[in-house]
View 1: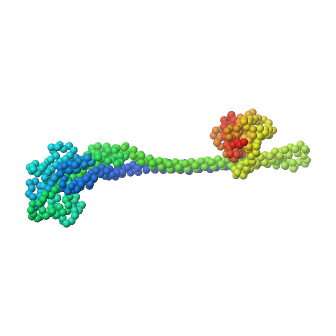
View 2: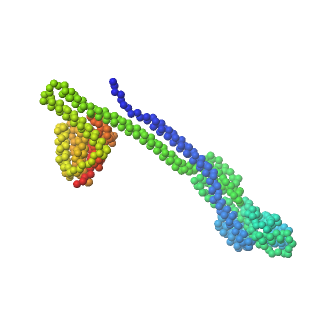
View 3: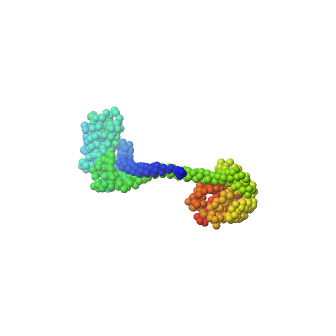
Amino acid sequence: MKRRKQIYHKNFSLIIAFLILISISLVFALALGYNLTQKYIENEFASQKIDVLEQTVKPYNDLFQNKIPEISFYQGFLDSASAIKYLNTIFTKFPFVERAFFYDASISNHKITNGFKVNNFTINPKAVYQFGRNILPDSVVLFKDNNPNSLSMRTTDEFNKMAVKFTEFIESSDTSKTLSNDDIFNVFYSITPNRITYMNIPRQEELKIFKNLMFRNQPPSLFYEQDMLTFYLNPLRLQIKNTHPELYQHILIKPLVYESLDNEPEIISNDIPLPGAFSDYKLYFSSNKAFLVKEVNSRFLPIASGLLIVYGMLVLIAYVIFRNLNVNSKMFKLQHDFIDNLTHEFKTPVSVIKIAGNNISSASHLSNHERTHYGKILDEEADKLNYLMNRLLSFTQIENKAIKLKEERVELSVFCENIINTYKLKYPNFHLHYHLEKVEYYKTDPILLASIFQNLMDNAYKYSLPEKKELNITIQKVKKNIVFCFIDKGIGIPQKEIENIFEKFYRIQNQYNQQGSVGLGLALCKELVNFMNGSITVKSREGKGSEFIIELPYEN
């Protein structure tokens, strides 16, 4: 009956399916990650404009909330000199303030030529000045009360608005209560496009006096100083703070009604109105899609890197599984070959011994020649079995660290002569030579060293052509090591097989290695060399021969 071939089943289709699945997942994850990153950038383009607005109008808020209220510190006693000193600090710090009107006013119950009057309460400008970056000296004074006919409606427009609000407040206010924030903002501020007007806030006692002036008949009162300033602002001189240059390629200040005539689909734009006195203008943001792609790519790169790392780990896992399957397949084949070869190695001498035994037992009488012949057969076959068992036992002992190194001083020339003479008796056609260089003695375990020699010599004889059965052994001391070189002229070892020849049970498939080997010779050599704290390497060329180099530590 035909023997059934044993096969190690490797299901690589699952690994291929796994690789296809994770590859598809990677592509999907990369596409999804890129799309989400793109959407996130678009959302940021729409939302981060608030941050740009806050930073851009921060100087305006500082002017409105901190610098303008400083006028009240003077309590109405500003004059043209102190006013220009105060305004110079504003012109220096806030470039968007182009000019300012200073109204030096007074409040009383006197008759007035120019101003505003309710009952006995009067408020009128004594002088009006304008200050600015490009104001000529002869244009600073717009009005003085010694020339009443020089006051124009355009000059007093803001003054009249503030005077009306202030007078209405005095008329209806409860002077026993402190001013609320709403009162201050509604009465003493006037915010119109590109303009802020501020009147200094009187003290509570002054407010009571002003109310009495309005509703009571009194002798002519004192003149109470009241200052008012109008600031003219240019929003185009605001310094734009692009806090997100990675999002916004261009940021411009445009009129609120501005609409871009450029309808290119490659341009993304957005806007946000400016606050307060700049409410007729807006910040206009625009970026080319190609510009935003750079930011999308920079933010997507860590995501892609993370996905690729995960993908690489999964591929590595697949590779490890694939490698383990291959290793297991090789191990299965090695073990299968080992069992076959071991069975053959044991079966052959056992069969010969059995045949010899049967011949001896069935013979009626044996001559001396026959007895000697059968005795030699039994002895040789028993030696083969003993050699095979000793090799297996030695390998197991070395792997389990069950042997100890028994060192003694070995004379290398005697050691080599004994081994070579033994092999010449066993293989008369085997040409063996040795050469010692700068070394005569070596402290080692002679039994283990002899085992290394025997395995390498067996290999050199077995894997050489009949006319090239030759081995040269060179022993030399190199630095702190002793080096043994075994150079044969055998069939050589293929380069792809060199890394495997020291594995146990591994056999190169060729015509010289079909039977009679269990794949333990070189593996045993490597284990012995490692046990003796050395190293073994090989150089080989097919058809030319091999060189095994063993380096062991040398101690005098």
